[in-house]
Image 1 (cartoon, rainbow, N blue to C red):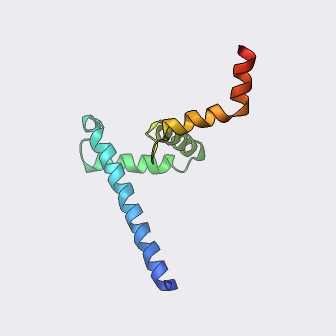
Image 2: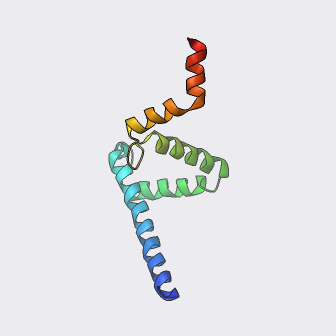
Length: 106
């Protein structure tokens, strides 16, 4: 069993990794965009960050941003192992509603 201090240190490391990954995600998104068309230098970037910070104080804007992120997350591929085709077909065949609907159609 870990000590309390060891647990705190492990959680602190996880938090630092998460903070670093956010910065990497933002940098990757900016690099993939075509913002270099209008961002001329670090002062433009600082102004952009300041503007986003201001907008982040508006709960409506944050809600829209998070909703867009949720939609994009749902569009992505599912994690984990895909379902086996045989199991799903077998489970549908054993469902009473599937059998009843087939009988009533025929």
